[in-house]
Amino acid sequence: MAELEEHLLPKRETNLEEEEIIEVTSNNSHSKESDRLDCDVESQNGRGIEVPAHILRYLYVGHFLARWGARMWEFSVGLFMLDVWPSSLLLPAVYGVVETASVAIFGPSVGDWIDRTHYIKVLKVLVGLQNISFIVAGGAVAVLLIYPSSTTKELNFILLVSLINASGALGALASLGAAILIERDWVVVISEGHSPDLLTQMNAVTRRIDLSCKLLAPVAAGFVMSYASMATSAICLVLWNVFSVVLEYWLLSSVYHAIPALNRRTEKEKRGENVSFDESLDHAGKETSIVHSTSNEENTSLQEKLELKSWRRKLLQKFLHIPTVEAWLVYFQQDVVLAGFALAMLYFTVLSFGTLMTAALKWKGIQSYVLGLARGVSAVIGISATLLYPIVHSHLQSLRTGLWSIWTQWGILIICVASIWVQNQLVSAWMLMGGVAASRLGLWMFDLSVVQIMQDSVPESDRGVVGGVQNSVQSFMDLLTYIMGIIVSDPKMQLQDQ
Image (tube, rainbow, N blue to C red; front, side):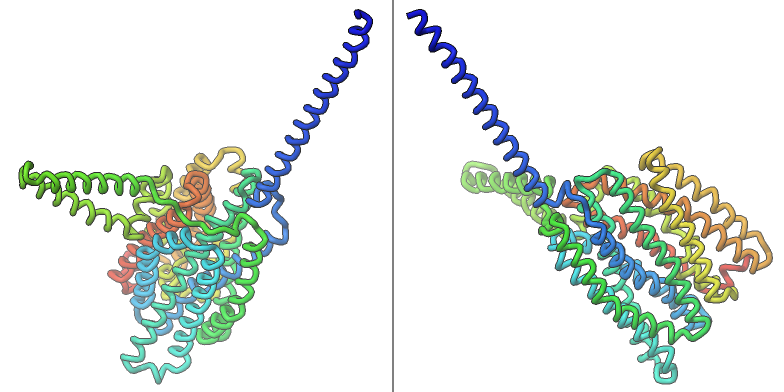
């Protein structure tokens, strides 16, 4: 019997060992299957996959086409308006007011619409609207310049100028939407699941593209204006937008179809504060119903107070659900609101190569091609800021990079302040242009710092609306500048102290 047990025990131990091996193998198999499924899920979400280089090139080239058209119009429109009415800065200032007011008022709605709408629909609308708007505006400018005799009548002149202002404002809104879509949304979605350095690099490249367009588009437009004519420049602007609309859409739609994470509808969830407000409203309604059911026992005045309170809450709720109001509420709830306001305050200035400064320098006798070159130099310095930003950011991170950048900008702008007391207008103009151009080093590094802080802090569902409100605040500050330009529209008044 003992021998039989000794003979059977090894077999039992062997069977137990075999069962343990089978169990371990089964667990490993399940683990591998689970890992494979997780990888499949990540693949479906578009995360953890290396972004193809040619897709990034498509993104950058499409962004370049959009920014080139916008920057060419931005530089040219002030000179077009000044050529139409050479004796005053009124038309450039009025156009600036119309454009910036449109962005300030409707910018939050544009961002909110981007958040709520499928990416491919957003792409179709923005690309089409931007290019068509600039085609119409450029065509109206060409008519004013080529056929001045037929537009001397007051009604025709007003209609064409109004068409330029309206089309330019629509183009600016579409350009804003495209910038929000690419620079604040798509780059974040594409970089998710990768090293944070990828987002920093993509931010720097997209900003570099924008500043490169600031460099090249004004130079090209300035040479055409100087060596051909203003009308020829307007026609070239129209032809550019006709050419770019199809190519731009094809490139960006290719990026959309190649990145799985972009193939989804980005509908925002209801925000907590609105939900809680609705709950409080329902609770108030229940209280009113209880009062109604026991009205014979309760005081009538109490019932009226509760009904009035419920009516006020309903009215307030309707007001808070207005898209623009809702967008501003979301913006003010962000932790980065103060950083956003700091960036926006920099737009309340004429110390930039914008419409007013360009027109004023043109009035002082600076040639169009010189203005284009000066703006190009400014853009080159800005591009160097995008090259320097990733290096500085790797050592200081976003916050300290922003602080050092803003102090750099303010220090360089002292040159512009000093130009006020220079009697020679030509020297004063060159000091002004040089100081503004050099200060772009600090400006664009500060801009990139704030943008990345916002990208890291703002929830995905609110990126569009926060970006829209941020641009709205910046446009409002810019609007104040143009209002000052309308008040002081005579260039002689601006230079009487020099």
